[in-house]
Image (cartoon, rainbow, N blue to C red; front, side):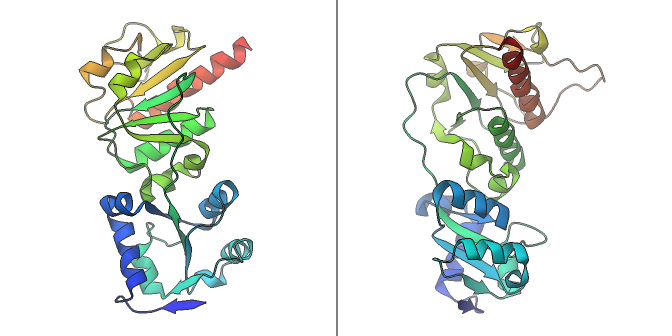
Length: 261
């Protein structure tokens, strides 16, 4: 095993760049996956990471040891505890992370059946939670507008809990053009809608629109929604956050589809 104890080490300097800069992650086509569970999911789906990095304490973890055994063909790089904490995305470091090429989706298919559109989401935790719900609901394709937070940032990956590896995530998409050509229902939750989500037929080809945490959907994209819906909130709250609203809509679709089948 190679041990790194100096902040001046070139490999460590690059880890810092990848940990701190979305621009650098996009430039290099690489990102960091933090934690044995997520790395194991990545391995099962894509194979070995480019590099695997372990802290000195991480070497003593049974979970990390099992992961390293499954990645025996890859020599781990060991960092001192202080250096590992500088690149970890967590307050309590997991003890292991991997450097991986950012997975790229295939070309957008001509016919979409069931997809999710996210416009200008900014919060990594929100996007990660939405991706996790989308994967659980059986969505295959997720489209992110040009001003969305980078899906492959470590915080989004962590919040997604493996969802990234079950989805085709298309970034930098012209979502207006995509929806103009979409052949199916376009559903958007809106406080101004008059029809309840639960009274709306969500079966068949469908695209679900989710907007920015503060501003919601742009007027241009909202105008393309064939089915503006409201989520009933008898408790008196004015709105749900983006991740909660997305989950409610996604699983109402799941419920209706299961009932119809």
